[in-house]
Structure formats: structure tokens, C-alpha cells
Length: 357
Image (cartoon, rainbow, N blue to C red; front, side, top):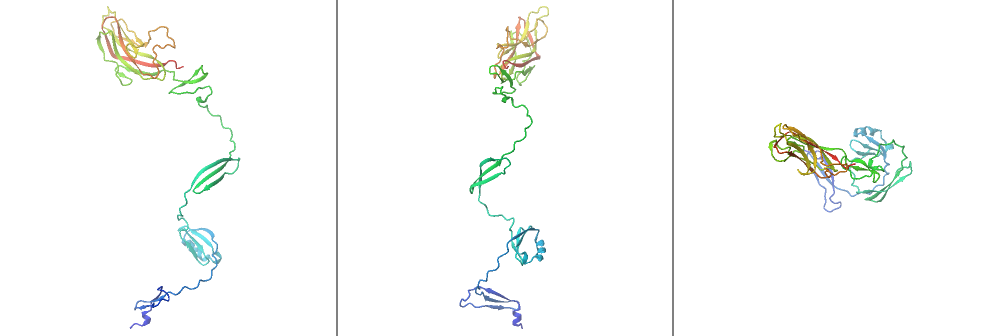
């Protein structure tokens, strides 16, 4: 048989809040050989106690590594150390010694703070202060619209630097600047008394045809032909791109030809000509043939078929910004037929600027 003591050897007493002073509320008691419980109603709140002493002011002591280091420090602390505070680096907590133990404030360091109010700062006045003065900054306005005003100290005058290289020629007082094309050179203009940019005065090119191949991939000389009876024959066209200045062709090269005559009765000569724009255009080169029954090279030389040419002459001049085609043709002087050979035929053209200087 179990005794009452055995029934309530592990009795738990719990307070319940079922309304103090309410009618019909009773306490219950329950017991078994293994457990026992007694429920008691919660009592009425007591009187407020006297105000305790104020907490000691925080005295910041810095960082401490972890809880182990804090536990090693605890036996050394007394009431005289109340108010001292440390940050535990391993957890980010703040601990405060109240004189008998630690009060801990978890996540006091490293936690995200509340979102601040967005603010826009614009630069206001920037003034220069005296040499050696301090940088001064002031912020005016009401958040979120603020203005930053600065007073920057004036720097001291630096030492004179080394002499630099020559500046751009366009900045020279005796240079009349203007539009510049590729490879332009300065030339003296006596009218304005200044240097002015002029197109490059040197030779341009070359542009060539060698046998059946042209510099631009176009057709070369026509195929060889024997027994030609026509008084003239167009055998090649050399295309020249537009230039940035007026120019005159300087032509070299030549064509192999042969009159169909016996050596003891030759009367026919075959010349090779180069003309601008068409077979009837201005003559600019001539390869004079020979009165012979053998094959000869009519070698091109500059030729304009006029007398008394001067540097200012417009004969054979191609205007600037205008492409042109040079026509190579054979011209018979006599009555016999003749042969033409593409092998070893060539034409080379260089552009010589006129009026560039």
C-alpha cells in the first residue's frame, strides 16, 4: 500500500490565474504514485517596492575576444568595477558589469541599423581661401536637400618649369589656319603675309598597267593582234582616282609594235599615244615608233604637242576632285598594216600637282 507521502513525493505546485476572488473557484490536487500536482490561484499584486540605486555609468573597456576570456575575467570583478563594459568580438554582444554579474545586450555591434532618410547633396559655392589656410566646408539646407559649400586654400606659386617643345604650328601668329587635307604642307602666301595649308606638292601615285593586269583589278592591255589595218586602235584605259589638287600626268612605259613591211621597202611608222578622257582628248604622252620592218618598243615620254608651255599653262591639267581615264592608242603613219604585242606593254602614271605652291 502506498502512503500519502509516496504519492506526493514529486508534487509540483503551480500558480494559475483564474481570477482572484472569483466565486466558485477552487483549488485542485491530483496525485499518483509517480506524480503529484497542486494548483494554487495567483495572488494579488503586491505594493511597488522602493526605487533602487541608479545604474552605474558605462565605462568603456574595449574589446574582449570571446566568452572564455570573459569568464576568466569575471572572478576579478567586484562592486567597485560596476559600469564597466566590453564588446565580445566573437558574438558582437555588449556586456555590462552591474557589480555582481553581467548584463548582456545581444547583437549590439554589427547589426543593421534603421534605414536612414535619403539625402541629396549638391555643390554650392566654391571659394578660394588664403595661402596656408584650412579647408572649410559647410552644409546648408534642410534634409533631404542639402548644399555643400567649400573654401579651398590657395596653393603656393610653383617653381618655373622647363622650357617645353614647340607648340602646334596652327597657333603661330604668322600661320593662317584653315581646312587641312591629308599630307597638307604649309606654304607662304604673299597676299596675306602668312603661311597657309596647301595640298602636298610632291608626286602622287603611281598607277600602272602591266600587260593584262591593271592596278585596280580592271582590264589590262588588250590581247595581241597582227595585221591591223585601222589607222588607230585603242589598246588600254588607265583609271586615275580624284586628287585634292589640280595635277598633270607624267607618263612612262611603252608598247611593242611592228609594221608589216619588208626591210628594204619600209615607209610606215606606228606611234603610241596617251590621251586624257578619250581617244581624242588632250595628248599627254607620246611613244614615237620607227620606220623599220622589225619589232620596236614605242617608249612613252611626256608630250603635250604645244609650244611655249609655262608653269601656269592649263594644257594637260586634270582638275582637283575629278577622276580621269587615260586612253592608250596606236596611231599609224603610213599605209601598211601593223602588228601589236601585249607582251612587255606597260604604262606608269604619276600625278604632278600644279599650282600647289
